[in-house]
Length: 267
Ligand SMILES: NC(=O)c1ccc[n+]([C@@H]2O[C@H](COP(=O)([O-])OP(=O)(O)OC[C@H]3O[C@@H](n4cnc5c(N)ncnc54)[C@H](OP(=O)(O)O)[C@@H]3O)[C@@H](O)[C@H]2O)c1
Image 1 (cartoon, protein in one colour):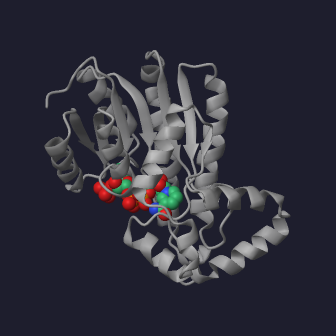
Image 2 (cartoon, protein in one colour; image 1 turned 180 degrees about the horizontal axis):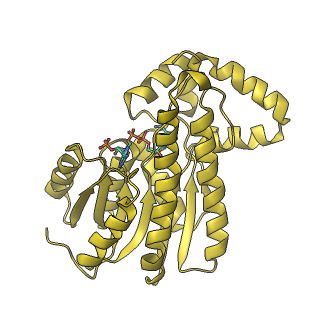
């Protein structure tokens, strides 16, 4: 379908698989036009074909490595050239690494920070003027439950998601009373990629209590987004855990988390 120029688009990063693909499906079901972004490896085209076969919405794709310094700028230029109005920005693309801090190459950590933090800040900064031009607009940033529960053996990922969390809450306050509403989403484990499966298996049955499907995360996150919620933690057990852990002294909490996540040490 051709770009419908005056109907707003939802921009979703990391839309080729996992939670991002679930966001794309959920938004298409709501009749929203989509601009999907992911690493240029051919998977995005497949998602575009799948969605166009089922939904009567416009699905545009923009394959790009978001860790490139000019990626956000090129994406804005694409929207301006196509005269696309963007009213929802979903910063979902992210990556992580688990293991003893010094055992993972520094380059991998810098890549995580480039994608989870630098790309997200660049997209928020570049797209804010476009979002502010709308009557009502939304930013959804994907953090993690780990933002509030710092995980040993995932120190850089945890730190990067803590950045997403704090940044989103601060930006949200700056943008009150609108038109842009900012929501941060903090899922627990979600079975998406082989690494997520490996981590879930390492925890055995315990993981099932807190596990959500990508579709559940996307649906609950969008519900929270449209209600203007500041923070969305998908899953009742996960919400209870986050609340409970706030009551535990930090030193005890960290010792507990180290014991629970020691299984990642040699990943
Ligand atoms: N899975 C979990 O357990 C979990 C839990 C809490 C939070 N989260 C967060 O939720 C978000 C989605 O997680 P997920 O598990 O669904 O991820 P995923 O299945 O690994 O998918 C990651 C997506 O990001 C894209 N991507 C990766 N590097 C990129 C780059 N340099 N430039 C552009 N796109 C890039 C991938 O594109 P390609 O497929 O083309 O490579 C893919 O579409 C992440 O921010 C993650 O940290 C995940």
